[in-house]
Length: 128
Image (cartoon, rainbow, N blue to C red; front, side):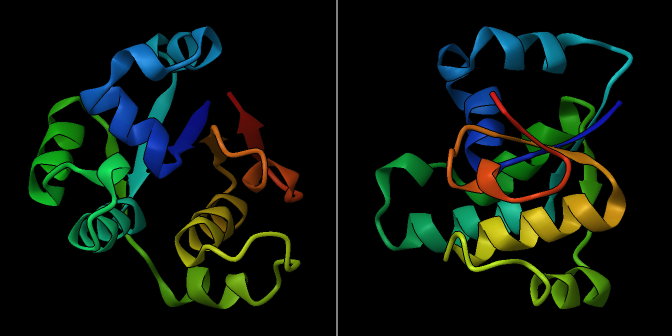
């Protein structure tokens, strides 16, 4: 299966492994799964860490390098993804999460999230 990581899942996988649920660990540890991260993840970390958010306190260059080193596949942001955001219901206001949801729907990749608000969206989303 294909999975796209929400930003906190990506951060935890790289820097705070112990935060991950047993279900997330099973999915991420299965070599048959393809794990994706988005340019939106890196962008979110860059923005929020520069604003002083402690839960995003990781250098975005290091995060991207670590994700690639771990064998994760980088998903670029396209205009198709941006346009798909307009079709989402107004459940959650975080623009980064909304873009990740649009990418998951557009690319038919299951979004792994720890955010209950994100999990309320229709589409391929798994709360772990």
